[in-house]
Amino acid sequence: MKKPLLNVSILLTVISQPVVAAERCEAVFGEVFNRTLEVTGPALLTQKQYQEFLNSVDGLLGPLKAPENLKVTMTEPGVGGVFSKDGNLIAVPTSFLKYGESKGSHPKFTTAILAHEYGHAVLNQNIKDYSKLWHSYETERTGSAERAQKAMRDTVEALNALRNAKTPEEKAAAEANKAKVFAEIKVSSERGTDLVKMLTIMTAYNEMFADTVSVVRFQDPRIIFKSLSGDALIASSVKMYKDPATAYAVRFSEKDLKRITLENRQFDKSWGPANLQQWQKDISATIANKEMHPYLLLAPARSAIWDAIKNKVRNPAEQPQILAKLLQVIGNHFEANFQDIKNAQTLNPMEMNQSLIRDIEKAF
Ligand SMILES: [Zn+2]
Image 1 (tube, rainbow, N blue to C red):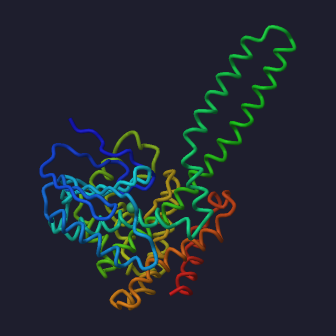
Image 2: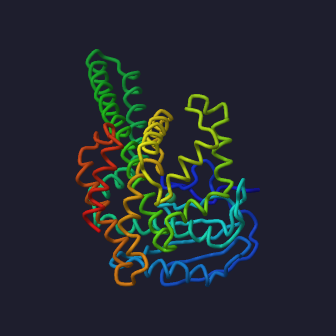
Image 3: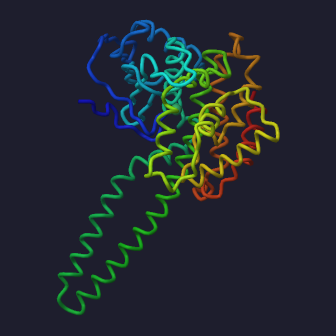
């Protein structure tokens, strides 16, 4: 029986369909420094070749630290890939299940996604050196399940105390305590709503950084687009929007989903008036769907990155500075814009891209 391999966190490439591991086809196990990499799917590359690939990504990190104690699994054919922050795990299929105009199973496509997931791990390893604020929201996220449990316990205790109160004095004290507990829960639940919104914005920066890792590694602004174009991932999204459970949502067609989730990840997409107008329409629709699509929000900024780095990606002197500079830009931009958690609620996507683009142009 298949069961989910990973307890997936917010940093998902695939949200609707977690990667699953069934029977082990070929098990190879090895260790480079403190990174383990296991191949459980039918191998297009050997364990050693996957390790060498990640070593080549390490060569692009410059002053950034390589992720510590990371566990990478190359699984049986599937869709997308996943990085789980909580377990420091990466899982990517050795090949993608095909769909539509699939270009086949070349190992380039899955290693491009491996580079992307590795990019999440790199950001996770380094971000607190670049933004204390980011780290504080992450820490708050980690404690949120515990806080919810405490709120539940406090509520049960307050209601029990009220039920058991005998004298008017006991009843008054229990009522006062109940009011206090409920007021605290209201404040904490408002904070929780703000935090969820903030985390979706952090995810958008995170996806942009992870895509850039792959773009720099392959020196190709369309590498993510090419890799995912023939991936059955899009089929699962189309299915999701046809599901009666998502009847509340803005209906996205296959064409919409390809534009939103794939074409917007082309780092050489041109942002003339027509594309910008469509992008704003898509942003409004994804907000209406109670999600700000993590690949969509910073799509225009991706093109500014490519403009800034296209002459540097082949230059051995400049290459190892690119990702560190970008992480610095992200850290500074986040610090400058999101000190107040309410700014996540009032975010103007166009202004966010414009100011980030100015920062990218200044930094490179
Ligand atoms: Zn991702």
